[in-house]
Image 1 (tube, rainbow, N blue to C red):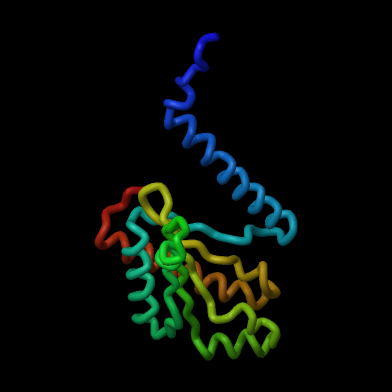
Image 2: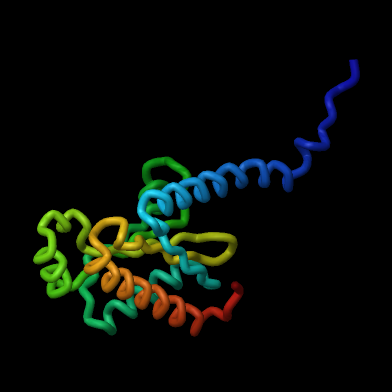
Length: 170
């Protein structure tokens, strides 16, 4: 009996495509379901052609310059590696403004579960993405749109800042 063909197993392109396709399809299904349920995407993604660490540093600089309180930076990859798990390139920057938080809590005290605000920075395809949650998935659009605009502005400013040190690649 002849040995089975090894050409598929030797082709890293097909193996990577096979593994990546389900992840991309799952992400697309999640975003479609979110759009059907809420009328908008749950997450907005802003591509940045700079390494994730540079984007996190740029975001922290922007927060500091705007007088926004930084509460924490969570390096998920570091924590995962310390636990013996695969270290994914992902950070969460947690920040807020007590004045803005007071405005949100005046609208709905239960919104305390969603503050302080956060932005994620993830490594993707040699660059990064800044990921933010559309606040309309959490609170009424009358209040949410202003907070979403702030998050988008911070993400764009961090992206522009990161490009100062790293030329655009995407």
